Image (tube, rainbow, N blue to C red; front, side, top):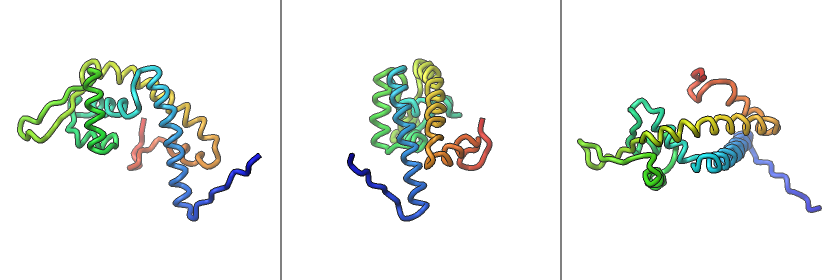
Length: 157
């Protein structure tokens, strides 16, 4: 059997960053698989719909704000929004006071889809984190996610 090389990054910061990237990739893969199978959505599509559905601006956001919320590059968001629009889940419109400003609005069908997909998203997220919490390198990161605070240290539900 071939020897598997051991990689030891030089600093704790680099090792923790790499662990975070591994955690995110594993969870993303589980979410993508479940959302695609059960709802025909990618994680990016679900995340965009959720940002729109749960925004305090009546379900519409300027595309630049949506790009920051997901987060994705502006060019990727344009393609993503075009896909969601073809699926009948969003609509685009220009800002009446600034024709350069493009907004994306979630449709009623989009709200129904994100509501149905949210149960899958949350269940798979919990399950994936529980499984990954058993990994020695990822356990501390998973524990932080379960502590119930957001990045600003505010309690979460």
